[in-house]
Image 1 (cartoon, rainbow, N blue to C red):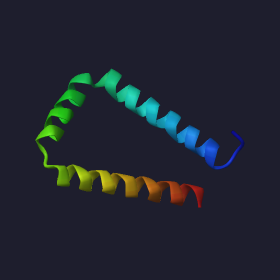
Image 2 (cartoon, rainbow, N blue to C red):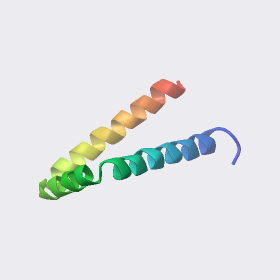
Image 3 (tube, helix red, strand yellow):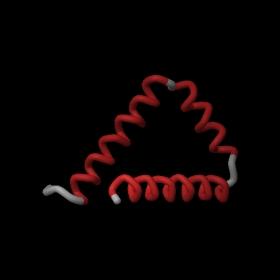
Image 4 (cartoon, helix red, strand yellow):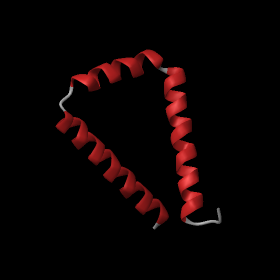
Length: 66
C-alpha cells in the first residue's frame, strides 16, 4: 500500500493490536472482570459506550491528522 489512508489504517491496526495484546498479557484477571461486568450491562449502555469511544477516536485522529 502506498502512503496516505492505507498506511494510516495499517499503523492504527498495529497500534490497536499492541495495546490490546499488552492489556491481555499484563492484566488478564482485570480483563476478565471487565468482560464479566460488560455482560451484565444492557445493550443500550454498551452501544452508547461504543459510540462515545468511536467518536472520541475519530476526534483524536482528526486533531492529529488535521
